[in-house]
Length: 457
Image 1 (tube, helix red, strand yellow):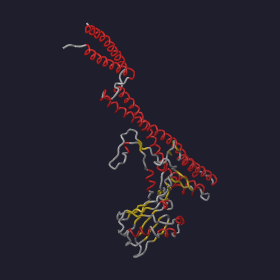
Image 2 (cartoon, rainbow, N blue to C red):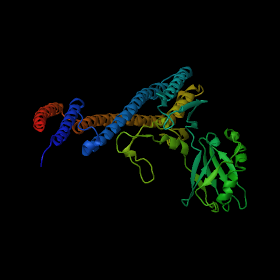
Image 3 (cartoon, rainbow, N blue to C red):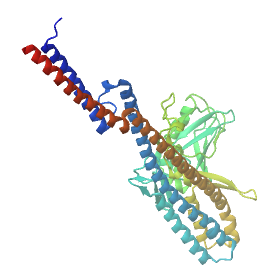
Image 4 (spheres, rainbow, N blue to C red):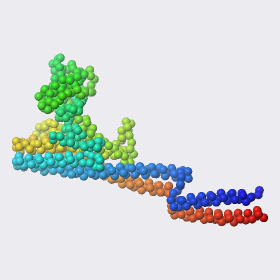
């Protein structure tokens, strides 16, 4: 077979182009240090690179979330420390000093005024913002959480001492029914409990009496739940207004009341009574959560709810720090004080009111203020417990942030090992390819020159 000059020329041109292409590729790798230019060059390395880039992007988002939440919590921690000092001073210095000494009414008045100033300052601090978000507003961080109205504290429009928006009643047979009041009645019925007396005379209609904030509904035992609800949604409002309790005179309608828990046809037959109940709205607000993904492997349960262990809860509902609802407090002598607020701000208001009462002797003041101081101490412990938890969360955020920073370094190192080449390898490789290309040109020129002359001869 004769090898022609054309055949040699075509083969040579292909070889020169391959050598040039290899030199060009190695040149690109020498200055951009990339191990491949397109996924098809190295599918495995490309797949590993894309996966590493995704992990780096997620890690960056996690670190950004931690930075934001850490700033949020640091500001909140600073504020709660300041508030804790003011709350502690109120109990240990102001109130204790006033009731254990020989102060006259004028001096007590001065202390009470200072307590109220501290109270208002605390409420103002609890309405502090971080950026555009209120720190202690829970999930609804764009709305002002706390407002004072007539010396009464409201959290998102709900009286913090309210415990009558919804009450659950039980009888001797462990049956229970729930009476839900409309929002318009929640504040009016603050501090009231409800009981149902099914011992009325046969054939009597429902009636209501109010004594010491206990609303007693009386009927005979043949009345069923449906009849009870009809009464509650109807003439119950008139009975409340006519009960002699001036506080209930503002009730205009009870049409929004509903009764749940028992079939409508079930007879009352036995007396139902309720324990002190906190408004379900306040309880929900105090326990609401706002989760942030910080790289804990966020997941949901079968109901679609976020697993609390897989994300970070950044919600700081202020009402959970201060307390809500009321309690019955028993003093050392066994006396029971009913409807004592759990909320620290409300307790400050109550104690300041007693200190301002110049008609009380020091002895009488000590007796009257004792249950409020007792509850204040418990609520302050709860506040400090929440503050400690806040500090623990900050430590957790710091530890998680450090872990993510170390992980970021590992991911970048992994990316460098897959996506990029070592310059000490890439640069010599370029020179080797360059020498191959130049050698190809030189050798090819010599071979083609001889072959052409042979052909001409």
